[in-house]
Length: 244
Image (cartoon, rainbow, N blue to C red):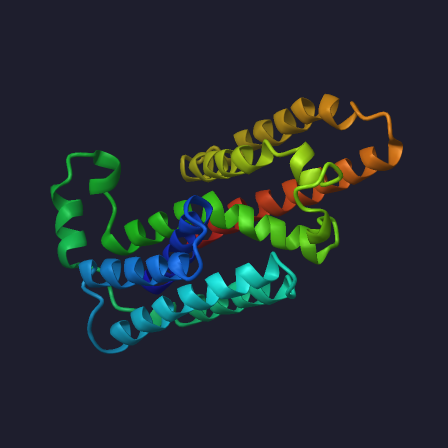
């Protein structure tokens, strides 16, 4: 479980850094450094755990490179395949991962927040990775899905015909709704997440119908539906990881 949390944390930190400071090589380097630092704080610095930490740190750099290419002129499917394959391997090998402890475990024992103090270090690491995934990485994955399905055309990015510019509020709304869905799921109120789904559709309806050009309306609708379902699947998939 600790390796899965570290992997998600590495990707999430890389993407968050890229959204805040899109400097060449910086996001991947930050993701790698955070991975190693958290791994050492969780006492994962020996044997197979150390090897896994170093591999995940390297994957943060590779992830940064693949996303930059995928959202540019390169194949958008490449980072999606990388994400799915590395996560699958991490899940498959999760039984071989050591148990997190060290300073992270001692901090959880001493923290005065009941929700955190009740967590064991492995689950806390996984929860941190899952929540980090819902932020910038969720948006990155959604954009990659849109590019693969040709719903989002990189050549039109930033132009008036770009649906992402016309529905740009989704960049903020997406992370908020994913975190909200995950929190509802953890609280055992997953059914209440349907309210979020319904509310988003109703609030977006006037925006989708506000264009006189029918072809543009169809583009906006397709962008909204594909992006929304991809975003919801990321949140629900994250809940499956936490349910292990």
